[in-house]
Image 1: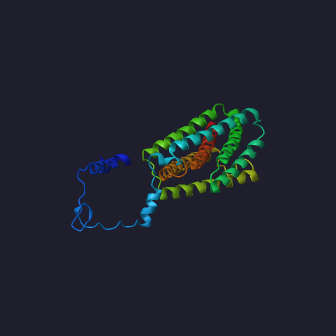
Image 2: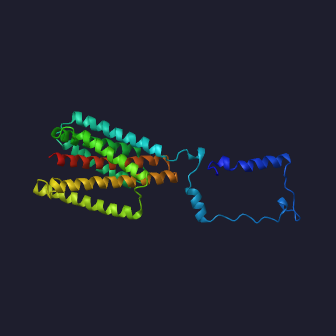
Length: 284
């Protein structure tokens, strides 16, 4: 089997060079003065643009990989981002009164603005990613405290449920049970857009008429919508995994690991909130 190590694959050439230097098998000129006793070799053909582009996209080996994004980079940046969410969430839980959601709503709106900036910003900013995580943590800490006051133990259940969805999707993706294709992505995004639109309409109805609006967050219909929301979050996780894998294979700059960490954090926050809402409906 041919080794993928470039040093090993070129060992034969090095040995041949040493033999030639020692006088073994030295090439003899041909009848017309051509090397190796044969006719004059034609000049090397120039590479096509497609071949040059493929070489550019290929991942470098060995020391040349310095500064390229790896899966480990994404894991480390995601851990830092989630740790920021947890720390600010714990501070929000401990020091902000859960009866007053003013701080939570303000933090949620600020986090949304920062998320939009990060989404459309050409160059990723680690400081903005951590700012988003901190603001999201303030919001999650306040709302989690409020839910915990009404449903004892629900926060731990929601965290475990979120972790279960993450691990399950990771196993399904790595095992090849889920394949991210263009058709898969189009269908999933269409469902997600429809879901978000319904939630916005329901929220508007809540502001106008009060109560649960269209009833999408309570009763049997609320359970169905809660399960659908979790499935959409799982779908976004598969897109995140696929994008991270592709970016690592392309050898993008290491700084892009922050963008992947941001995407994973947004998806995990989505799943946590949907699990929290679903559990509250079931416990009612």
